[in-house]
Length: 247
Length: 247
DNA sequence: GCCTTCTGCTGCACTGAGTGTCACAACGAC
DNA sequence: GTCGTTGTGACACTCAGTGCAGCAGAAGGC
Image (cartoon, rainbow over all chains, first blue to last red):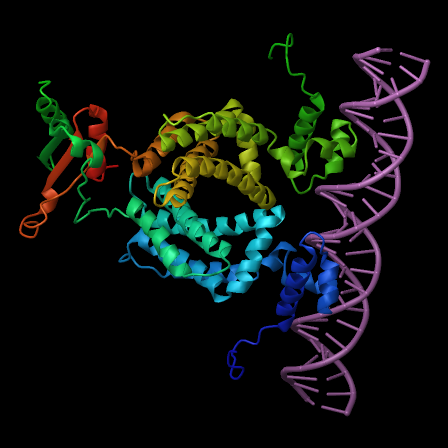
């Protein structure tokens, strides 16, 4: 499909042949009932060559994550101070989705495989963990100096990964139907709303009223306290107590 | 040390002997340079018995996680509707800390081991993942019906685990000095403030500003706090601090 | 043309984790 | 005593992963 002329990177076809042969056998007789010898026999190459391209049998299932992780790391490293940190890691997470969306049928097949085989699930966890660490390291740098900088960085990174995977998996479960991008945007928006409070927020939260209780009834139950921002806390408490009539 | 009389559960000492022998060798010559044959030779048992007690070589490094996971699952299963969900999973996460704190020196040794050996790191990830899934499954049940129920469940579970591990690891890095409980409470408090808004929150709105005339003044200077009358004072202070971005 | 060197591939032997199977000993029930 | 059960050990086997040596072919100097 792509242009075959003027390709700058002449990638070894053996690697692709191994992936091809491996997935054919995995889908046919299962991952655990396929040996590396079976794969290399089908691909017509030597057994030693397999481990030249893939450090382990699991790696052949995730042939493109190494590149994607490198891309994400480069993306984050190239970020400047002008980017809002949480938004930035959300954008970085979207790169993973793009990789999955590049080849939907392959991604769906791999998803079914990893769902069934415990060993592959474990391997996938270590892959996801490396993405999460990349996000967390970036955030740690951006949150350096804040009171709970590393804590916030780790939690936000974990939340972003969880949200991304939630949307990604539901897309994979639906066999790649529907728009994955929209689902991931929605999920990441959820995280951004939870954590994306800027350091010095120009505009704050939206006002919510108790929906049910207030409707049916007694406005006396609601207290509204207006104060200047720089009011000390003890004054706020004092005013609060006074408003309740507790003096 | 413990009472030897009237012990209801007569646990096989062989399991403990294997853990003992394994860690002695792991610390002496490293995890990867210790074979299962070495372990069983030191413990004076047959090789086959090792795999009777531990499904894999990695399992001997985490001998008590299976029990802890079962305890956590039971704890969550026994939870009623009266418990606030996010608080409940935070309490569940604290059970893991308790297990680590039961035997600090062992936990610190294991931490150093898992930090160095990639294979053990990967295995630990799969253990942590099972905890996270237990929390997420519970939250999915509690959030069922909410618009983004499963998304919120997954994200909160990931955030709780990340916060817990952040505090736990910094405690382990300090060789088990200091109070781990306080650190974990602080970390989990961070997550609870981010997500713990209950379904019928005692404090509804936090911080807002006049929408129209915001342009001319400095809206940030004014804080409006709306709350139910019966809200405890400490919650008000908490929300006040949070609204000011002091977390 | 020939000869080097380097690179990528193959075959082979080896280690070590994990499994299936059978045999054997200790134990309690009857 | 004989049964069945349970825990244990010994052996053989599969298969992932590694180290090493050899070999073909391409690139380059002469």
